Length: 68
View 1 (tube, rainbow, N blue to C red):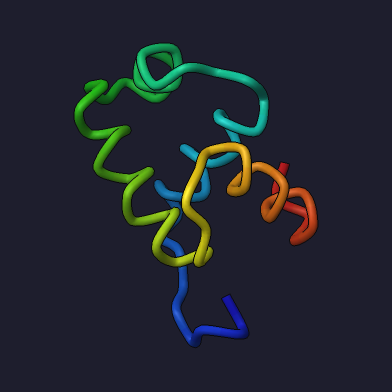
View 2: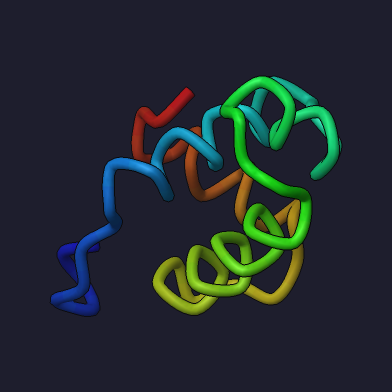
C-alpha cells in the first residue's frame, strides 16, 4: 500500500481476491485450503493495511487498487 508503506503478503492478496469475489470466510478458507480462523486473521491484517474498517470498504479499496 503505497500510502502506508506496508505490503500485503501473497496469501493476504489471495484471501482478499476471494472476498472480492464474494466468498465468505469459510468459503475462502475451503478454496485456499486454510481454516476459517486463519482467513479471519488475514482479514484483520488486510483491513489494517488498507486502512479500512469493514469488508465492504476492503472490497472497494481492492477494486480501486486493481486487486480482483
